[in-house]
Length: 97
Image (cartoon, rainbow, N blue to C red; front, side, top):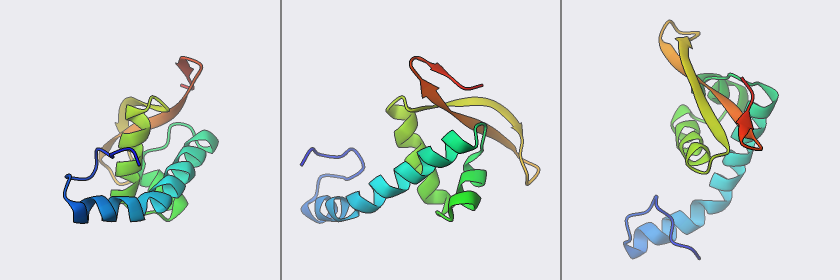
């Protein structure tokens, strides 16, 4: 298995990362699908809409941004009165705005 950046290299951490991989991949697909269907969503919108914890959504979003699958937009006033960045899916070098 390719060594993942989210484990610290110890055997215990590597085993935990490998065991979590199916769940992480499933969450990543759910997050990406939600953004496709709901462009300009915030991380909190995604967490609310998918019933995935906000912490897990943030991890999946970070991975999707690093892989170039999604991009962050400008900050806007979110549902809870704080400024949030919206997310859009990248398509063939461009992205939905």
